Length: 227
Image (cartoon, rainbow, N blue to C red; front, side, top):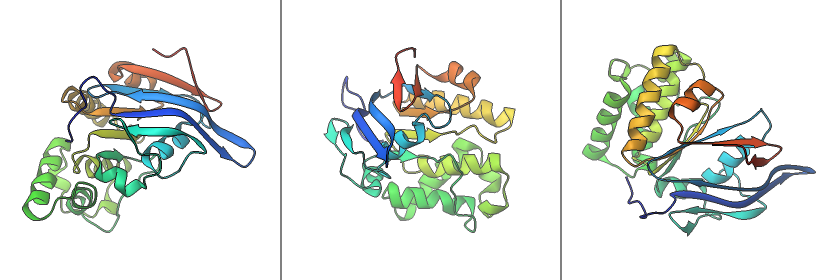
């Protein structure tokens, strides 16, 4: 995990504006994601949460505003560079390599985003398999697994890169109660070890249980009633 700036926010959005034609998806959004904390975003579909994630990850560039990582302006950097700087994400729609095994999916994360090779990548894969309880599925093709397990595989691919910031888009969708409990315990532990987590999640019970700060989005803005 990359070093934390003392007293600083790992990831920050400053006045982000994003328009699609005549629609303003983000209207001056500012947000801080500090290390060692779980920050959550809630709000109805279309509120701008996924657009914000895309701007933070580098998949989409805003029309105005800045994105900073450990104080560095990364607004113009592409997604793969941000990943190498320690920014990892999952997606609302599960995105895994269906024909690859679970272990190889994790290896992709370790090698491409984490820059690991050889034994170092093997160690990252083994560590992540243990962390997520995926050892028995390690050699199974990812496409043969149920949705809940695929969510864990996608999370594992992000974690195999040993990121400093983790963006999670609906990570509990499709999980059974046991898997949701495991996710809650895992994210709390990861934040406790210094990881900065930004979570978009419709499971309000999970959010209220694990989030240190909750922001509500509506009409492309963060409303002031969050905790």
